[in-house]
Image 1 (tube, helix red, strand yellow):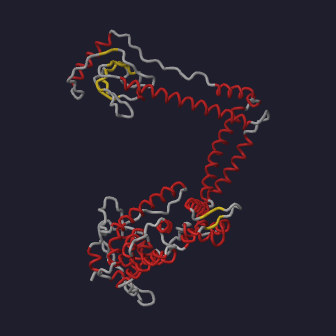
Image 2 (tube, rainbow, N blue to C red):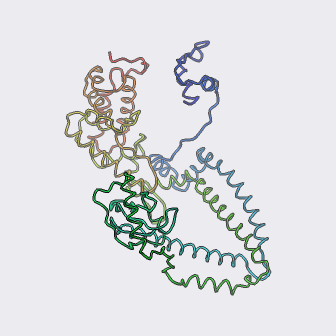
Image 3 (cartoon, helix red, strand yellow):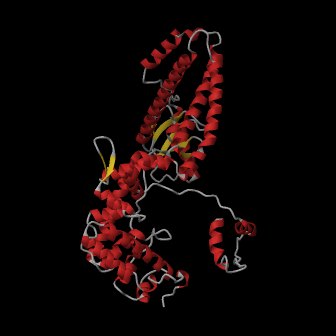
Length: 509
């Protein structure tokens, strides 16, 4: 719990300007920390942190009023951008220190015979190429070893070349064909059964003989292991068993490596008597330069973040036809964009798409209230695993809810392509209550089939009324506007219309 949340909870203990003092009682429970509680109660200053993000409604209104360029300049002066830029100061200071050190390294690696930075770059290219070939060769050998392990069968006698149990071994359990990494079980001469993987046979493995394994062999039985290990020892004593030799690199010579080596030998700095000393300074230079580039990347990612977010929002709006680019390069707001500019709800874009796509056409006022309630309502807890909320028996409303969900999923996918995240999936947890209340049912009947507290019900109803008012003003269809007004009248009654009521004191009676 934060100090601000604690203050909100204890705020009802006294009213500023009315009460001289107030008392808040904290109930003791196991695990309570008195020092932490005292810290919450005594804290009076809270750090201000901006949660500002340019929304779709904001974007179209800013562009309509001042154009894209001035809108970006305005957002770059926001408090949110100021906080983001404040975190860059420390990184910028670190970059300046790195640049000073890089200048010293560059001076130390200066060679009188030529450009040592160029020579160091050739050395780095050669090292990178050799490492890449080594990785490819290792991966190739590992694949070959894994394939050899998959081909082993029960009764195959193999030779392990590495580890404490190097020597002959007998396969007693083949690799599972469904495993990504084959791991057959083998019995060694020391009577131990273990699994082997590709790492245990880096140079490959193959069967050198065959030995019959009894059908009832149990690897957990010491007697079985002892008898089979003796048979394995007798079988392999007459065999000329040699450990596998390291296989050479099958890739052969590499032209790029040959070219780099020739370029190194012909470079003027190759004959410098201080070549290796210069090379050590060059290595430090390259390492620090790499770190400096990463710091610059981090600075770039934090600079102008609000403006870049605005650009991504505009890209989504342009794809959907709310904005359009003219031949002269200017961006204008379309009629649909003007409609979106009149929707100030949290789910402004989804609401606009429902209007554009006719999702709510033909609904009555109660059905419209129930459908729009899914765009307003947010559950307090996670809904994973929760039972589906009860819904009205209205085919038209059920279809509208399904269409809203499809639209939200499409918008979320489009947003992900532009790296923004505003749209959330509709939540029907308030739909039944909103529909029933808009139809004129009494409060006790509405709350009987709902898990909402009376105060929460009033709060969500008022937010839904606000959304209905926005739809009534912004929707181009006269019929939808009238339906939204009728829904407002159906919702604004009883405890919902009484503005002087304390929501926490409401009861179902």
